[in-house]
Length: 462
Ligand code: ARG
Image (cartoon, rainbow, N blue to C red; front, side, top):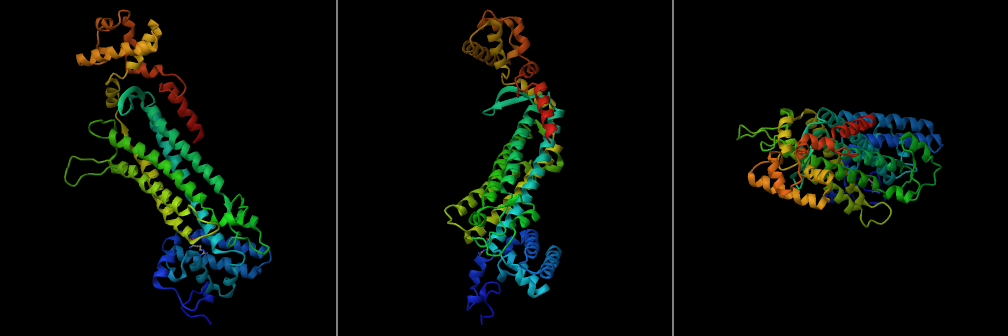
């Protein structure tokens, strides 16, 4: 006889129950209850398969499948009593099933183990999150496309080193982020395709002697096929790592955009006005309107990439197959997923609501000698100067304008000719910002025609 206090699921060989500290470090029910729906879906598929292959009776399978639905509704309605002594979601569900349907519950675990069960549950959970991320990215991309379309030809400064470099268009800048989030979208889709193999039926590590049908459970759970190696199936957490690395790269993109919104919404820039709905006030400075959502999105990469690093370290050097270390996978992924989805939704909301200040953008676009490259290109094209010489002549003209406290278009022809005698009146035609952006017709360039072509290409895809 075993001690009454030993574990009812695996306590057969134990004379005493676990120490309270052992129970505390061992239990995952505090967090893995988030996988209850996936756990029950996996068990229902497994039970149906066990009956179809004659491993258990149809009536037992039916009792199990119906009982599991009762358990699910108890969990969803909040009446389920989770027990730390039962360690995890798998044993909590099975123990409750036993209370509801009695003896047939004990047949559910035939031909499987918690090792393939947890891998299956977690994969189903991560797969749902990839689908949510796909939807979040699509919504954000559509919001960016609407901004790009509204301001395809609005001029603004383009920066390198955060110094005014060359004028660009608002639409072009928005479309740069469409490209980034578009790559995130393709990473999400890739990851989903690669991870969609079922671990169920790998059992503890070696497969099982029962005549199970892994194809059947894989299909029932929406997997493309069963995973082909049972050792790998129970010890693989690549899908979680890919989820986290995909989330991390996307969070980097979100943080870069968030940083630009913080800068652009400042009184010194005034490039955009964020909506009241996505801003906050200060409790001491009545005039303030702070871009808190953007700042928090900027920060999210810290915890998301932190989760990625943490799980990489957990998995590093683990021998095959399952080790309990792997229980440390879930909290990282849950937290990263929650924050990724929130950041995507907040960014979409901010982008939808924000107003680009066309006049401020245009005023800034012309300052800082932003058409100097256009001037150098004119010297090459019209006067036939080698580019290096044209660069030098333009540098002298910039210095001259700087000395006079004016911009390049404000120099006189006499000023220009004092630096290079062959310059003609025609040079002034290339010094306007509109001319500058309109001339950049190379594929992927900032000219409004090019930007509109890219908007159309994207609209056909999303
Ligand atoms: N709670 C465990 C986890 O999350 C489930 C698998 C436990 N397997 C075992 N052999 N102890 O990893």
